[in-house]
Image (tube, rainbow, N blue to C red; front, side, top):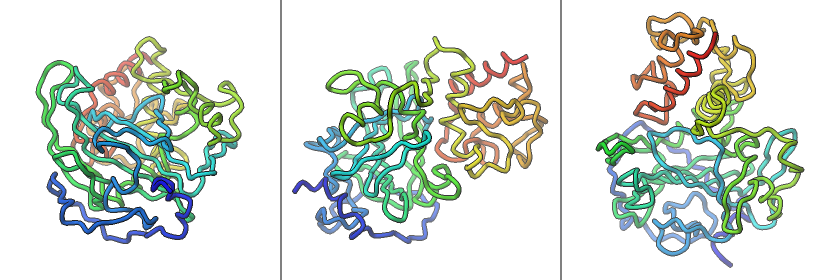
Length: 361
């Protein structure tokens, strides 16, 4: 039996890691030669990414086996300009369900997210360096996150629950050379963002993010309809019956919609009624219509030094006097928002939100 189908007996073999994760850096070159051999016996998490059997052929090619389904949210969360490829694995014979616009996944589901940089962003398919692969695995105890860091030779990715800091260099879209210190969050930090009512939960696999078309080998199809066709989802009737978000990078779409899409994917996992920033009173979900909850003329609850010299989260028509853009435009600890997931400023994202605020009357 192919080792990818280990998911069916996940309840019998899941090993719950209880390491006390520390905020410390590690070397980029992982020493897989020092690891003992392991087999795909269902004792998760494995130490090596290759043991799962997610990809066929040369590992760095990330060629998915048939059991994996690619997915892409309508808008992507900013992570220091890293490019990403995503796949989902459903245990054999199992399927997700859609109820009241909520996706519920069976035990043994795995979300696979690869973060990589091309040497030159003007040639995104050439000279790719994969930095990390994050797995979200669900069991009877809920979702757990496992970060895997790739070695320099791009032959393997090794489980590093302590995370790491990796120097990455590349040429950006403007032809300028860039060097950043990419941060891989430790296992415990993953819950900082992946937090729904104090329970670890996925961000990108929500109905509004997946209710759109994706190009498959068989042609274009709505992602949720495609899952349904494969027998991996029940409860999806039609696209119009469920919410759908847009890609905020599409400048041909309305500014308000683009801004809300950006805030939802980058901020709402914390700034929502079920998120860890719920006490802030700032709710940045795609469907929020209350100006005060969006921060318009709203005094922050507990921003502290993060507010700088400004008084309101959003000052209509005055983006440069708004706390929201002030915090987005910073990398300083205690000021920067989001708090994790980036060491650089997303200039395009900041400009989008500034344009949105400046358009307000």
